[in-house]
Image 1 (cartoon, protein in one colour):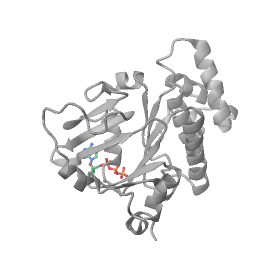
Image 2 (cartoon, helix red, strand yellow):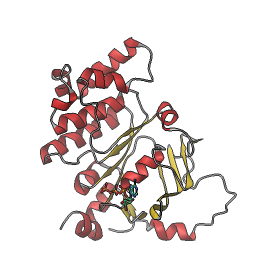
Image 3 (cartoon, rainbow, N blue to C red):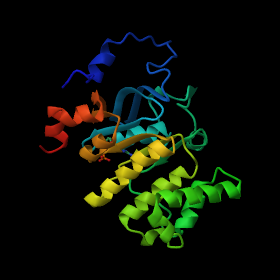
Length: 264
Ligand code: ATP
């Protein structure tokens, strides 16, 4: 079934566009990314990407090493500089906002490689995630909520993060992000380096928190199968471009995706 697919790169070539046009193409969506370009010196990592994400969606970007997935998340969060294009969040232009202000506006990035504070305990890591909140009661209530989602972290709350397993560290990284009650989470390779059962557990939690905590999720992942199963919508990236778009189910059935990304 290919009818739901959009060859986005072709579509964008035929879209009428004027330089003076301020309204992005995906206006009305929670996140609107328009013609985003990122270069690292001579390397163009993103070559003019446009898409929108509606509130409540779980959207994944899949693609091979070097396709530009991490760059996409890092540039939305202003961790890497944009060369061109715009990003709107809930109607507000955040293209040139600082990372700190982006977090305050309700977006949180969980970077690749589970970057928890290794020398701090689980409890202290969660406190760090709540740095934008002053009220200790609110922080304690959030922590209890996190412990009800990630039960294993409750048992480990006094333990230093460095002593947690890879999967537990990933859970801690996600829980820490949720402490600030973001409305949009950017998740970079949540399954990276984890055993298959742990990857399944992490993706189950991602689906749960999306539903129960009313969080919209944009994730990038090399484990295409897990990502597509968990996603309402997905994009395939190749060399800095979006080349396919569809529902998770549609892409799971796509011959191109099956051959190139599912190893079938
Ligand atoms: P992976 O799955 O391996 O993490 P990716 O799809 O996330 O890959 P990116 O990490 O976004 O891809 O990289 C996109 C391109 O930009 C690659 O060619 C990469 O080598 C290059 N790149 C990324 N970061 C930098 C950097 N800091 N300096 C120079 N080039 C970079």
